[in-house]
Length: 330
Image: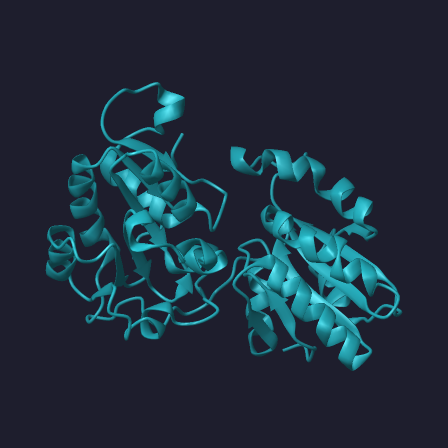
């Protein structure tokens, strides 16, 4: 294992193997802006280079701290960002990564980063190990497929005390027929719902069937916000979110009860679709004392949630997915 300083990170599948190799130094954050902010405070205090590892799809979350706090203190700190480069112009990738992939280099350069593109794993390791002078900001872009896939043992993959997502999702698909709109978070939740239901994204397919299904492909952390807006427009809404997604912008959940749509949060404690790295904290355990949120550890309890008008949010303790071949919403 490479001995390094903390890596502040929202885990990324492109960088997965490097993060696994340095798992003891990994500090998982709720969002990319938090990772940048903490790395810069670390740099200010330690007079050494702060290190961040994220996917470029989350660069938008870093713009606020980078263009305000970090810019004010840029002569007193140094920062390096290792970036998993989805949607790179020369690489075939999912459509939701196309726009950010095209602008990633120019975006980072406009903020003041020295930007380079990695060509092999040796360059990535050097980037992690070597400091840069105070006042410097450097970014290394790592294209898809350059690093080996992560091999991380997921602790809760077969816990019999948790709900199996493959068993839960058919029930949620059937239950969603009672709603006008369903919004579903990015990653495996969207893909599993699509695989089970076969329902194409409403606004692209032109379907007038009920419910409208909004697969939140890419905008991690904003699934609940989508549901809240539909709810405010008089729609009967079901939100299906994941704990990693919910934690990213959890302020969205701080609403009056009347403003909250019916919401299921699948809590497996990991970022499942990017390698199984743990989330920033155990959401299920943390909310076990709240009386306005229902907790479920089996399918029957989830069914009770849909029958009980007292609760608007249900946290379901789930396993990680056992199957990895899932269809993607087209």
